[in-house]
Length: 394
Image 1: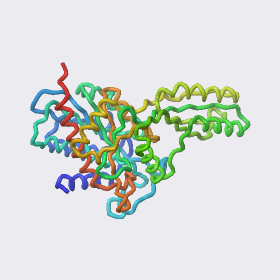
Image 2: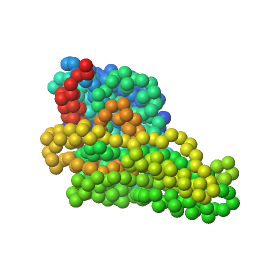
Image 3: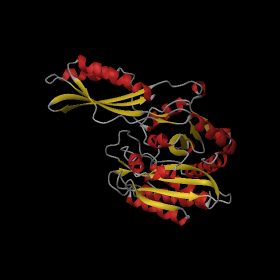
Image 4: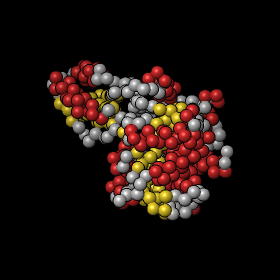
């Protein structure tokens, strides 16, 4: 393990010990900015809240390529995925010191890896051709941070040609999954306002919604891991997952009337109009109507071309045993990295953090910390490679 690996593990543990909710990432952003400035990057803070943007200009002309990491933690009391705790993390002296707030989704690793990539490339012996843009994003969990950063216009002015990110996953540490043309579901909120006075109506409507192709949310990290692995099993690795629709519903009231809140996680995104129409027909048949409180959130769609190119590079650089080809969408949360991919094509890659031999099942809050170094070396190499093979903008 290198000295940088050790320093990044210490950084990850410090962030894990002091997690901050969406919109409150002041200390985490300060740590990130301090390390990036020390590495010689040009750093802008306070971007869309506590966002940090750092620029590394190379010694030769070339395009701009961007890398994004998210920084916020979650409210563990309301987390929708009940992730079992692992003593490996919580007994080693760096458990969360913020009551009810924890890094359950791996953003502490994502941040440490992003810092490590920037530091590696800033001190590298090989000259960087072009510009590297590092985006450390707040408020990913509520899907606010990417939009807030983009609304400042800073990322667009830096004009990245391609955008990349990594997310922790239950694959073995040292492996990276790529999913060309696939990604994560979009999200849509639908409120079905139903006739009052009969709770059985809401129950019946909920039952009909459940029949719209629902994929139940995993109840534990072990169930999620099994489902995650099944998506890339060799026997289906070449088969497309054509659609995933995850629906949740809870009986609520709106203006004194019973209502059913439907939360749709939809893949592919093209299915959304059809599903909205079917839900509206169900509501109207029950004597009610449908409301859409917010606009739908887009699905994250990895560029087929750039994901394939990334997988090919990583296969050559790391060896074929280190790359998993996943031709399927993940039946999990949506991700606001989708908004950055609307600005420039790119990919989210899935970094393995599991080590089953030592009982580390890949839960993002309890990873094999050697994955940090794996992620840094993989992504530093990939970004350098992408700058080398991309032509400058005309």
